[in-house]
Amino acid sequence: MYATFTSGSDTIKLDLSGSIISVDYYCDYINSGTGLQVQYNTESSVGTYPLVPSPSVGTTNQVQAISVYNKASNTITVTVGYYISTNEWILISIDLAANYTLTYTADGDGWQVYNTNGGRV
Image (cartoon, rainbow, N blue to C red; front, side, top):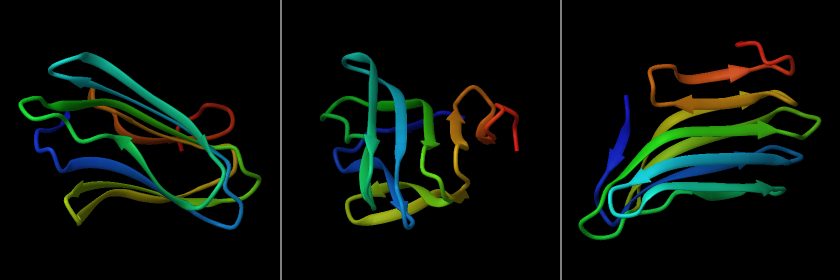
């Protein structure tokens, strides 16, 4: 299932909480006006960060993949939310263990968690 949104106020955000934060994240999406877009970053503090920005007027964004890797030595809480203006719908909220990865793929796998050896949890 592809997550597609069209409104100028629609966005997908990543919320991180825990005692020590060290996270790499990646997201790719297709914008109907500009094609494939990639967003990636490393965060080291508690907070809310944009994964997919609001599309421009007359365009759509279609999420293809999301990946969040917990580099910290402790478990953190990862929440991915879909926002319309000030309203939030939580897509997933999970306690992610140290060195584990949360992924989303639009090709049918949906949300998955992988351990330090790359195995599905």
